[in-house]
Length: 307
Image (cartoon, rainbow, N blue to C red; front, side, top):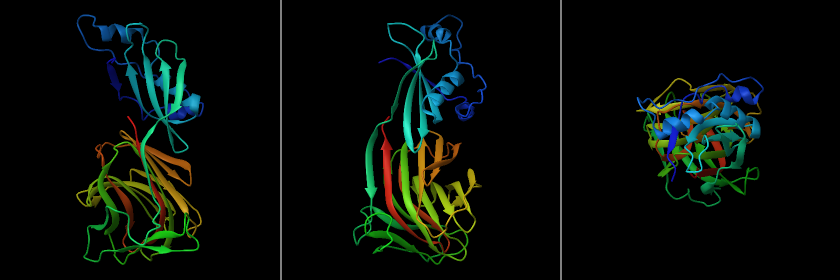
């Protein structure tokens, strides 16, 4: 097996700009510090294409948004090695191989999904393993249940939460079984009622009910926001996107989390991408609302991405 050099620099960078026709800022390939040439140093010296250039090539080839890049040292056949670039496009994960000497795209393919689970809430009972919980609770846990509805987004039943909390109490229905850390999440949701808050969102990489990532859509505020919750306290938004839409319609909220890169989707369109390393390990997944936000959810999809 050939050695792999991880290049984590510069991937917040100009790949997205290059995909839109803006030239990226060159990021030189790191050289191995050494007083005498080593095999890896000699190989890197033959890599005539920079990391930023390789990512720009990859982004242009599939018109996607770069998540991370990896330099792979060549085998006995020689050459300057290659870059493996991972990208997100239309909610799918792509892997593009770029020749480190010529910049030619060797291969572009979608990343394999190791495991996909769809929770459709068609049973009278909550799905196995899911439990109701609160963050900063006031002793009034929300009620989570499934019900039959003519307007269900998928099938005949939906998951409904009725909440009567206030302030910074967060209502969760989550599954502690670890998933990920690299994964795709999506759920259909319909804001039902709430005077203080409305809407809801997705939780992932959860350590417990007080530590996790959450992305939520709030039609009262016309926005979608990404947060980290640490020790029960919600951060300032890591991403904040204006979403003005029909509050009572069904909408799809989606996340692709690969390494430190978090890409957000709303109704199938990419709306934001950020980097954050607060939670890097596999963790629980679930659904979330704030305060008195009462919401209907359907078709929760969890896809763990293969390495």
